[in-house]
Amino acid sequence: MQFIDLKAQYQHLKNRIDQRIFNVLEHGQFIMGPEVKELEEQLAEYVGVKHVITCANGTDALTLAMMVLNIQKGDAVFCPTFTFFATAEVIAYEGATPIFVDSDAATFNICPVDLEKQIQKVIADGKLTPKAIIAVDLFGLPANYPELQKIADKYQLKLIEDAAQGFGGEINGKRAGSFGDIATTSFFPAKPLGCYGDGGAIFTNNDEYAVLLRSYCVHGKGADKYDNVRIGMNSRLDTIQAAILLEKLAEFPTELKARNQAARKYTSELMGTYKTPFIPEGYLSSWAQYTLVSANRDEAMASYKAQGIPTMIYYGTCMHQQTAFKSLGYTDDDFPVASILAAQVFSLPMHPYMGTNDIKNGECS
Ligand SMILES: *Cc1c(COP(=O)(O)O)cnc(C)c1O
Image (cartoon, rainbow, N blue to C red; front, side, top):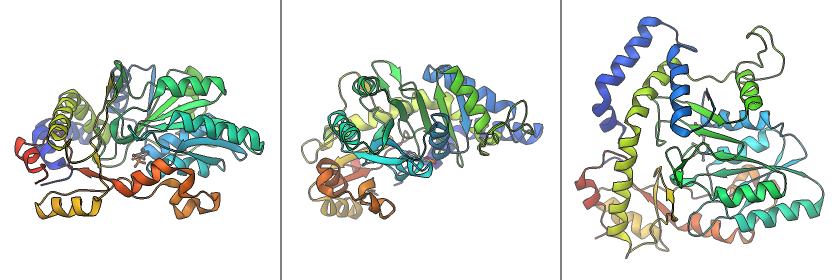
């Protein structure tokens, strides 16, 4: 049994994907080919935003967002401590200071109450300028954007949605990728919408940001790539990856339903045994991960292993516990909820091609 079965997906889409790749080999426009533009248009329509700019990976997408918002040394950018490293890394990479925020115990996402506390602390300290919030749609569930937007407005902060895991999620019919000032995603193969290598995208309704993003991702280009009006980077989505994503996006709504069906089945089987995922009213998860909480995690994982069922820990180390962020001086007492989650969560196999057998085997015996 596979944790994420990319082979089963390929078998299902093989003819369509092979044909798409073949078309690119034939036309030979490997960089900025027609599939890239076609994908950007389709992503914009699916997510419901004005502009989509594809790029090389989800980390670059976040970095490009930081560049557009002019995040720099002396700035404070707030993000959850319970996330993948890239969320916090891009803040520090710009020379700004990541300010970590505790998690909501029910959703695992950034806690709006603790966020406001952390913002007020930075303001009271008076050393850093609060500039932005990066919220993460952890494990596929959109963060609490209605509350987060209120806080962003109140303190005049920019709001960024890190939808690397959240693509496909919704809040009351509004799709992930459409929240905040800028949203980003990743097409890393294991994400809900993945390609066959690295890839990413940035979403925004802001015309000015869109122009800047298109410039920053091609060496700060002006009229063309040999007219360089600002310092940028080289971050583009390969045409072959765009071609693959066009077929995967066409199948995505069906896959999203299958993921939700698998999650419902897991929950009905496991809710007596573990703390199962909580999906608030009106929210839809894209189930990047199906994550359980157990005080006896080692035992639980060993029992699944004995049944031939792979499990993974996302994430065993919070940002405030990472060696790279030691100098920020945080302790577990600063983030009681996230610290417990890091010690107790584990994830079960989750992908759209789980047979009923897989789910049955997923039962805890
Ligand atoms: C995967 C991921 C990223 C980074 O995406 P890459 O394409 O691997 O660079 C950023 N944030 C979160 C929350 C992620 O899960």
